[in-house]
Amino acid sequence: MKETVSPTTPAGWRRWMIYQRERFPFARHGPLVAVFSFAAVGYSRLLRGEAGFPEPAQLLVAFITALLFFLQLRIADEFKDYEEDARYRPYRAVPRGLVTLRELGWIGFGCGVAQLALALWLHPPLLGVLALAWLYLGAMSREFFVRDWLTARPVTYLWTHMLIMPLIDLYATACDWLTAGRTLPPDGLYGFLIVSFFNGILIEIGRKLRAPADEEEGVRTYTVIWGRGNAVRAWCLILTANLVFAGLAAGMVGFLPPALAILVPIYFFALFRARCFLQNPTGDTASWFEFLSGIWTLVMYPLLGLAPFLMRALES
Image (cartoon, rainbow, N blue to C red; front, top):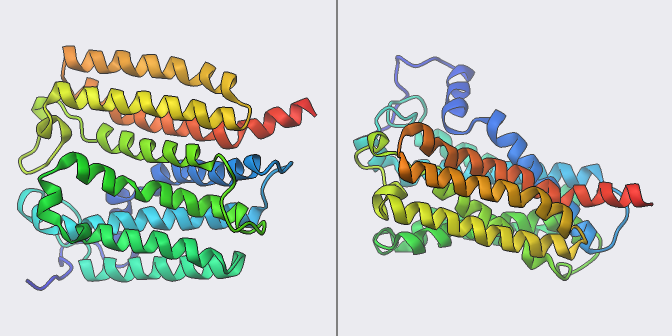
């Protein structure tokens, strides 16, 4: 089947504005990725015992590279899900002819060129970490060459795909520790990387928990795959694990009590909302999962990578 842009869609840049609004809204993803990448650089700096804020170039490269990685992930999903979208979700951008896979492929390639240029500009040894993330992204986009096997095992599918999160985070932290002349990450970074892994799983599950009336044919939500009760319990379990490792990561930089003082109330409120959904599974109660997953991430990263700087500044 030859892809063509539908003649009824807007021309030029307007269709790309529509695409980003529908499939990769920068207004939503930009702040989250900024917090994610800035906190990664800051946390690495804290572990190294460096005073003061990171260099603007480090923050810029970490942010743009991470944002482009997430865009590449979206593009990879468009390729992976094309046949399923064309069958069950023809209203999406690619099946309805707003953009083509070929065009998206070129954009993904352009993202890689930009990432390469940024790494060379900031610190050429970053290319090693960048290549590692690229290799994993490439294998993931091909479903590790065992698509049917993975599809039949939702848990394995989930954690293998979410491993890209700590790899992106590793690159963001490398914008600090590698540019500082280190050849290995600072001690204690593993806790922060595990937090990123669980954050990715939390968001992924949270956005695929739906009320019975909102389920769509052909859409593999976790409420369909696991059942409503098990899916909610899985989300709560990941949230709990995330809290534990966030506490570990906060303790590494001497910020455990303030971090827990903020995260624990959000944690119990999230458990309350999960119970509300189980008792009354509607679209409104289901929407809290995605919202709280995003809020949890937006709050957690500054607590680990930014707030400790402010605390040290006040104490000095």
